[in-house]
Image (cartoon, rainbow, N blue to C red; front, side, top):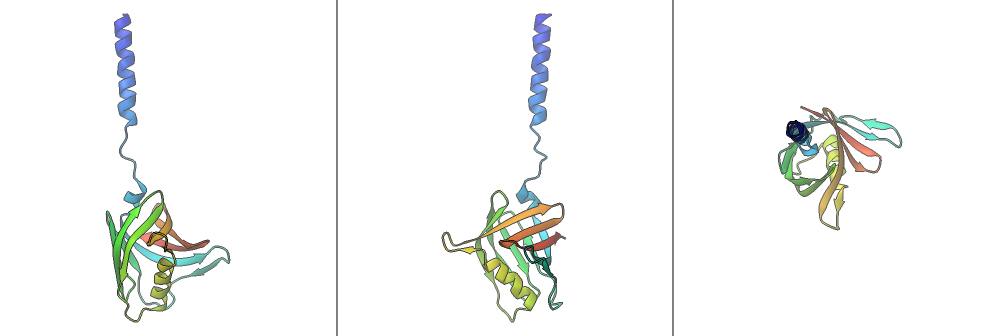
Length: 148
């Protein structure tokens, strides 16, 4: 009887350990993967919201495992990134520069404002809420994206 109780207790402990090893959780990077469309800029200090300034077309960015690519309607951009605890570090950022629209220029300026001369990376804080991506490019200034 004692051995049966020990065996039963051992089985419950083992089942608990196996049950707690749940790899179905989604990491922030997994949530980030895919294509996102810029919907607005928001200054949360002044409560100013800006949407497409000149109807020049969508700005989209696609995140792959370790690189990204996108377009501003008139130009393309691409590069490499790493992700760590809701911080994107663009280790490389390249783009074409053909007569950018006002909306595209605002996006490009936001990305460039995150550049650090300390390590030569672009440091971007981000948060994902379901199908919404919120990127902080300056204190209290955000870009909002929706997942396509």
